[in-house]
Amino acid sequence: MVGIELFGSRLMLGIAKGYVNHDRLPYVGCGVEFYIPVPKGELSRLHDLCREFHPSSVEKQPWGDTIFEVKIEGFELMIAEH
Image 1 (cartoon, rainbow, N blue to C red):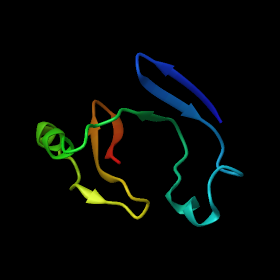
Image 2 (image 1 turned 135 degrees about the vertical axis):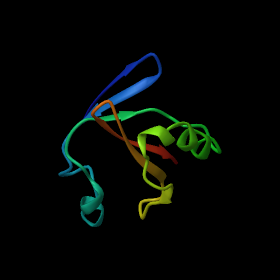
Image 3 (image 1 turned 90 degrees about the horizontal axis):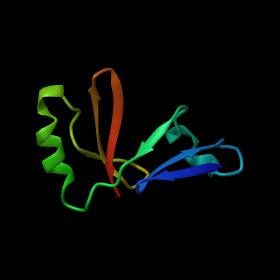
């Protein structure tokens, strides 16, 4: 696992083997994840601001985060509130 931080936002790259519990592997994606913290209680407000980009519904995930997905300018983003 390699992590870098730039102006308070983190980028982490790594492999799943040895870092992710076997029962969590179905929830692990492949690619690059940009982690941008969303303050507690702000996810719904952010979701409303993204309406023009047709975001998915806000849903609680099996791993515990509440998320929505949106595609903006060709970038597929998952926005999460932990």
